[in-house]
Image (cartoon, rainbow over all chains, first blue to last red; front, top):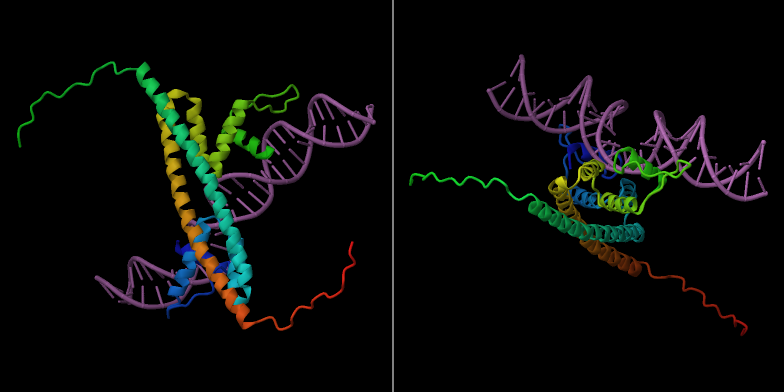
Length: 128
Length: 128
DNA sequence: CTACAACTTTGAGTATGCTCTAAGTCAAGC
DNA sequence: GCTTGACTTAGAGCATACTCAAAGTTGTAG
């Protein structure tokens, strides 16, 4: 996560205005870091910023929003499962296609055998 | 895939100009469809359009580009594996967090027991 | 004292991948 | 003949998520 991104996240309300050093520089607490890690994990799995904002807002309202937040996480977990399924399908497809390319390359090697045998280096290397 | 997307793919060279009916409408052959399916599968797993263009170009050059194309697919397969790993990590994290929310909700239910017992409907429904 | 690096701000700019608009053509049904 | 609907085109517009620019402040090192 770049500094740019951190500021952006603060701007759009994903993180509360964070503590500052005396010179005005941001200081992230361990709690901030944990929250940022969570955000990063959600973004990395394609949760839209909008959804993350919604979650962040509920979080600020405290325990009363537990059910709603849990729903968001459950929905996202389903989305993740769907993504995994899609990726696995593609992974399998690629395994097939790659195998096929290897076959094609084999055929090409047979049609175009090496015409000029590589020179064998017959110089005697001096024993070191 | 929408008609818009199909035209967009044709425009950016992902598919060769496709056959037309007499009225000028596009007619997709089975080969076209298979290729489009493949494209869709790659996009759905986050291959950038750029990479797909590169692959499509090589494909038009024929078997001589087999090695290069295979490399693209192998790289993408690695990318997919990485994505799966990331998603699985997030999935596990969410399982934990969701379990935690359930605990929190349990506590809230204990702190705020149902004060007004729900009315029990004592009317005798007429037997149908 | 000065230079430099590293942060600060607001607001604009960019990359990606569609997605839509406007104006036009065509074939079928009434 | 006229309407309707589905397509056609070129080009503009948009959503998302950053990413950067410009101008300014601050603390440290030489």
